[in-house]
Image (cartoon, rainbow, N blue to C red; front, top):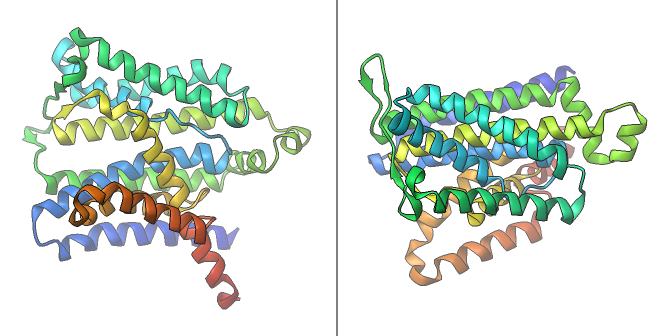
Length: 314
């Protein structure tokens, strides 16, 4: 138990240190923007890791919840005059309610059947956002009202860097606490074997549903942050490719590792910025790098590194 607590505090401490130290080497505000996008993507990835890494369930439509959170802060203030901070909460509650409603049905499925069901859910959300032009602006998107605190308008990449970094640290702390709780141990047992978990007295359906709801709330908050940061949102935020990006972040970094999800988000957000030198071959180079990582680091970057250094620590 002491070792688990130590590892948890080390992970959180390193994350806070990185967030605090990175601005010391940033030469321009552009780097603040990229880093803020990394932190926002990492929030959604950490949440998805709870579903995939802890409960062992795959979601290929998770960006749908990202879209719900994004459009909540776009539609709420513009159509109903609601406070943007309140809309973040309302978007999270709507995502949780929808995850509960949909999860009760689709989480009875397993394997590729579950993956296809979540894929259909993601397509449905993206279709609604694209077709309901009167509310969402359609494929062209809609502007998002800027948010303020005590009369201070939150704008600029530097401000959003610190805000998204603080929210990521909070979300990671909650995920690490969940991992070491009785619920987290039940989810890990579920990941290993649903049959064995059920025989041990664990309510399998309830645990999977809770993991789905928690992951949906993380994604919704990340979507709200992304929309407020950009000041504009389009249905692409809920696209299939965005869902695949989230899954890739979790898998490349290491399934079951919150630190791995953050690292995976960092790689998949920043690599395209460096690969622009390849021009039209940018996507090919990115795909090749991901393939090589998964071939030689099958468990993901962080778990593989931990396995390599574990004998040395002993």
